[in-house]
Length: 64
Image 1: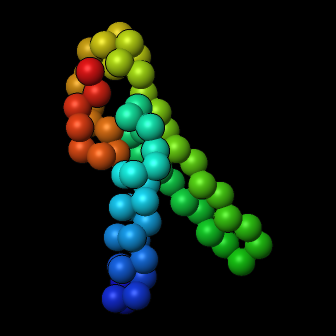
Image 2: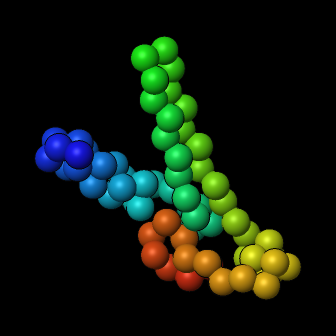
């Protein structure tokens, strides 16, 4: 990966940390020559408790 892409990803990650809700656990980007798609996966505290798992949000904070 070249430096320009790395810097863009770091900047995008900073924006996601600022703008996404506290239940966002991951983000996926798909880019092709014809389209692009952006998806955010969220997990609520109740979902995590029901699954018996602990997870951090995209900011690195534990979802409680």
